[in-house]
Length: 363
Image (cartoon, rainbow, N blue to C red; front, side):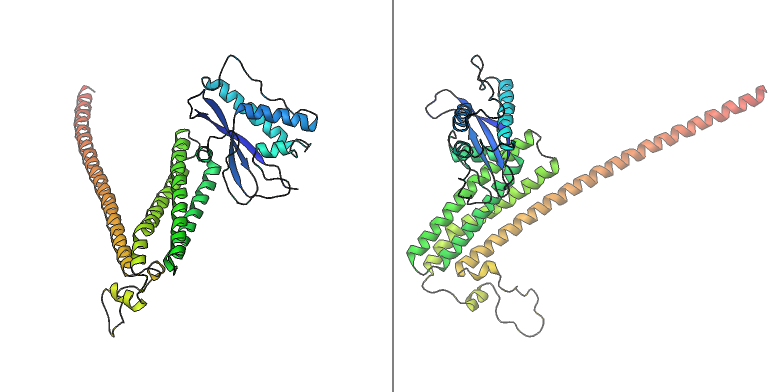
């Protein structure tokens, strides 16, 4: 028997419909299963409908009652009411999920409410964020999932898989022998890049929200910022390959260069006897699938990245120099203070000696 789902409602969201009707509160339900984690957003009216359906189907109400509806307050204007209802709805769902009595969990209404697969089917992904009834869009669910420390990592993994899919499609496009296959692969690559870029935006916003709410430590925040920085670089690289290299590949598809041509272009010709200073490195995986123009663009891109690294190193060196100069000034000030203390000590010693001599004369 599979373990019960771990259900929490860590956050809420305020949503205003597109028709500018009355805003309402969405409760971000996070479900952690053995193989996947996802977020479902629901209104209070959805919970009320679920409660009525469970009571009708099972013939008995769930283990604990649903938090009562208030007529004189609104969760949109009352943070205290929102927090109380969030805790109550979380307890309501967990009571059903953890109850020894499975009658409520086995109903279609429960599985539909949480967007769980039917009893005869399984999920098709290891980590996904799903949009269901009561959710304005899947983007809203992703934005809510990015504000949870656990589902944030699941979204990051999904983004990495999109990058891998885009890279695979670009390689398929460049190796295609007919235009239709190349266009189809290029379109799939762009679609994966768009999805990954959207997830990257949600992850950045969610990380800032978690940092403001202090839901993660400073070290973990820095680690995840580094992950996002690396993802931005990877996305930029893939977008450049998607736009520039595709045009070069189409122009030179009829006469693909040989490995010797590419080696001559980057200066990697036949080795001569004796020692060669500055000899180029052999061709790598990044250049093997590129044509002449692609190799030139890749070389320019690598030179640009190296220039940026040198600039970053120069900034670090300047900061180190400023710190060293500040330490030097501090040491000089401390030395002057010590000299002043020594002078005062000498003066005090002279006064003590005078006092001793007077004491001897008196005695």
